[in-house]
Image (cartoon, rainbow, N blue to C red):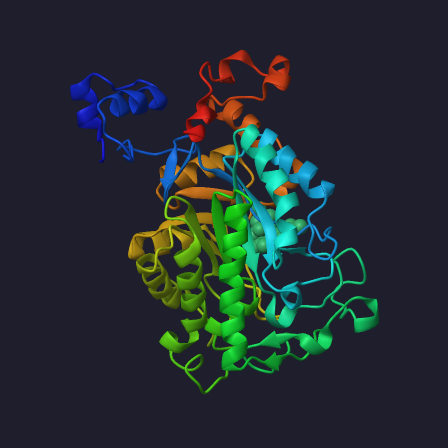
Length: 411
Ligand SMILES: Cc1cc2nc3c(=O)[nH]c(=O)nc-3n(C[C@H](O)[C@H](O)[C@H](O)COP(=O)(O)O)c2cc1C
């Protein structure tokens, strides 16, 4: 059921807080409805994606912390992710989390390839939920960019087996290294691809058991699934290489396998690189076609990034430099999009939403600089947001939601 502004006026509900409208609608026994207020959405307008309602549109982008041990999340993750939940983000996304051990970028990557990983993730999810944030996890396989050092160690250095690496087990669509600094991968055979697909599905099942609201399939930044769809890293002659349809097959199979086990009332995101920034490579036109395909395969939101598959690519980085890709994909495919990349200012983020370029913004480094960015953005934009009660004495009274806006998520 869609409630437009006319209905709101007719019902005398216009201008009332969303949660009141929702409860009135519920009282009319309309269950499982999606309340969508027509008109111009803004940064602090709620967003329903799949079955999940976010109270606003500020998401924490996934960021590797290289601080896991044998794939196990640690107290670092609890504090780091918990801080961003306290800081008011509508969604906190856990970093690239490997579905298989050889799919880690570094030995310190987070993992979800065994049931034992679930308990710590569940603790983090529970803490974030208590503080009103939705939680997502990015399911990843690093492909040919695996078995590398952590960035604060010797950068771009292959970790050898005696040091905890697995350079001989690195896999990709084709046996072509990312650069001379990276391991030369083995080309996956069909059974190997099937194993990856099944590992994604098993990881999604574990993510559900851990209580996550969102899973995001990582198909960007030159990792395994991007390596499949980019013609620059895929020279296969079988059904996984060559044509557009064949190159996107691995991602489509992973999507179908995840969607089959991921509950319908939870949201499925996919992160893609919209372009390789290289002539003859993956580009925005193919991304639009991929978006249309993924939309029909049950993907609820496309998280639009770029690059990462060509070591020498020249990328014109600047404020909001990837937002045009999210905008075009949204316009031409109709899928809900998130945009990421050098979004740092509240007005900048709000403008992206108000001008319809994307439905949500994902912030990465700015969230490291300021875990309370959403609280500060609400103040800057004159919007209300609920503060952690422990911090209320630090809040400007005008910005504190009288009713707990974020509590709408606990339905
Ligand atoms: C420390 C760090 C770790 C990152 N790890 C991931 C990751 O796990 N998965 C991913 O898709 N992107 C990762 N990224 C990329 C960010 O999610 C984001 O796309 C990029 O930093 C651009 O956004 P920003 O300008 O807001 O930082 C990482 C970025 C940083 C700074």
